Length: 145
Ligand SMILES: O=C(CO)COP(=O)(O)O
Image 1 (cartoon, rainbow, N blue to C red):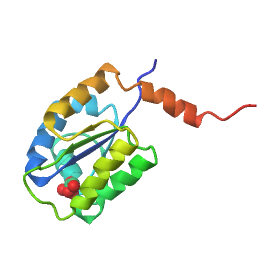
Image 2: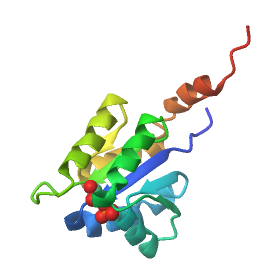
Image 3: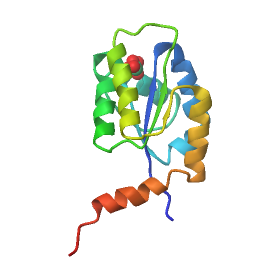
């Protein structure tokens, strides 16, 4: 089966920005084969450090998490890496929870820490999520009666 171009969302709270930049740098060869989305500041930081092209949404506290959530609800995101900061209260906590909730509603693989993020990216490389292409193709196929 042909490998699927995955739509991957990359998000990190401020305390985890350096970490997501390191992750994106280390996994750039894998990430560059896919279509990338990010919240505003996370995307800016990753693009400054790598050659990756990213669709940037608004910054998280200004609605970026909700924009990514809306994409998830439309079936337009295949995987989410959200390095959240569990030690700092966020002014937009409801948006953060809503994004995580929607990932579960739509059964989208979601990593909230670097350990899981690495496993997911290695899984992407190994083709573990290529089955999603079959689901997509079925959605797009016109019904011929
Ligand atoms: O706040 C965020 C996620 O909740 C991330 O937003 P930024 O990438 O704009 O900092």
